[in-house]
Length: 409
Length: 157
Image (cartoon, each protein chain N blue to C red):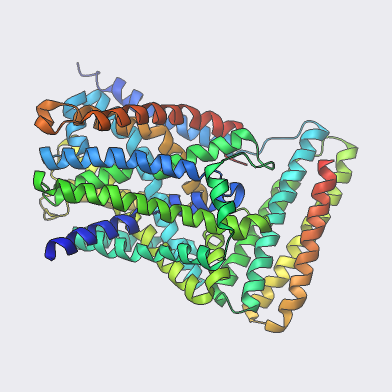
């Protein structure tokens, strides 16, 4: 019974923890501009994250070591440093966006300007990273993030023409009011949002923190194969809700407040209260995960002691990285840079950094010296290689499309 | 040997610098050298303003039915008002390239100003929780939205 509870809890937290500020904003924005004509990208992105999260979880369970620990050893310090710089630039940007997202969610509840809330948000994130147990952090915010299921109820309550929604999703086309480059720019952004690099850093490092062994592979795979796809369904509900309410009204999403309007339209104040709880949990949980991912990756590369299960005194440099990155994130937000714009750019730059994150995982998961009999099978390798081509294409296209479309305007 | 780490560091920083450059280039406001370019900027400003007015119309409609809380409505309206200020400011900062474009400037500025006024009136009412004002505001916002749509259609011809 305890085992079943543990597995169910893992799956639920994987669903609730899947959506972050990037998924919230990008899916809402895309739904309001393109309807469900880009839903296929979410499906492709979720399959990609499933493929690589399974690999990184397996690597953690078999070797007992996390991604950057092995990247430096397997690819050498130079390639490892390039990998670290690219991935950390994107994860740092995502961390800033998540802290800003928490402040924006709190602003919607309190009417206090988000810039006044940013320092307190940073302090709260740092305190949680320093004091709260890893499992508590993962379970509490993952479960509260399930509040975003309210978008699914909102879509149902809005009584859509399901056939039309399915038609948009299954027969995608570029809407007449949008250009082809803009369509592909947002396809790349959605792909980047679904495959954000920090998700695999956190997943694999979390596996090491929780001392996964070969026996835990089943649980890890269940979390990935069930939790992540259901998290992707949540993303599609968010896009569907804005496609139903904001698209016909000619509203383009540029604030977090607009993301919640379809829920209030369908379910009133109770609905929006639940959505706000979901916004807070999704962004706060992701802020903790991205902050930890920065600390994990830097510490693993330089060979420092790291982890939430280690006393702060024994992992002092790891905690210094957490503190410095939190202060830096708060400082950037206090320049009055728009957190939603940071979010929009972070998902596109995620796409740029994808090959740096996923290529080494594929290499390590194929190395029998590390993995023994648990190296990738044909299916994992086939999918891994297809996705490596896709992430490379997305990485190459991201910046030209950004310049060509003036960041999707 | 002592200089060797410099190269990987430089190489490692290259994508970060490239990304920052792309970010700066994507975000900057370019000048309008021809009437066509100026017209395209006018269309973009009017489209963006339409979205903000429609947002405020939706949130007032929801607030009048008590579907959203007062702080939430206030935040959404304030954000749209701020966005409209930014749209007006960005469009006003572009130099009209010819006397013909001056007429476009005058027309767009007037409609954007009316839209901003409607949204400002809405903020007053939402912060005072003035339920009685919502019906009139929905009409004023609807009219501002119609004017923006009509102007957008004219500019696109």
